[in-house]
Length: 177
Image 1 (cartoon, rainbow, N blue to C red):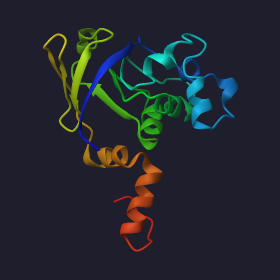
Image 2 (image 1 turned 90 degrees about the horizontal axis):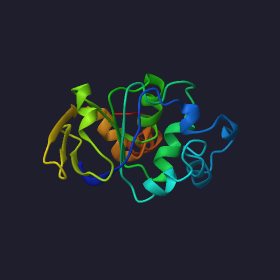
Image 3 (image 1 turned 60 degrees about the horizontal axis):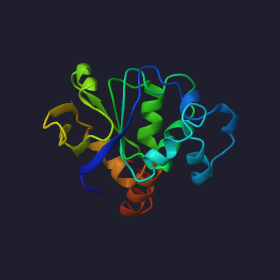
Image 4 (image 1 turned 180 degrees about the horizontal axis):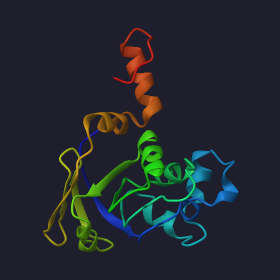
């Protein structure tokens, strides 16, 4: 997996976006990838899925993914096509679920940088270094770079895939590293 991506901003969301908003509770029994993706933000923006189906970056405020620790919220974003989410901050349960499911997340070094984006801005993201270049405005933004372990999880497609990959490299022993 390349550590540089070029994508546009497909959505900008505010603070305290709850997992009930991301993925409605009435679908908690849904685990099929396509079906999970179909319900992403359906109660607040039924067109959201179409915005992200070709990939893209979602910019969010503080405490993204608050509320229930349901894994489907992160899975719905990934399955719908979101390439990455950049936030002022994440709810820690959501953060763990998203990383474990292979969804790329970054956090702004300076929370005020959240204001520097508009929908359709074209970005070049070097997520290994934490640098986002906004090609539309020419501005460069610094984010907290994911550590090597998180990059390994993302590159593998999720924590389970990383375990399977490393198991085959280590004579059948289950391991993360």
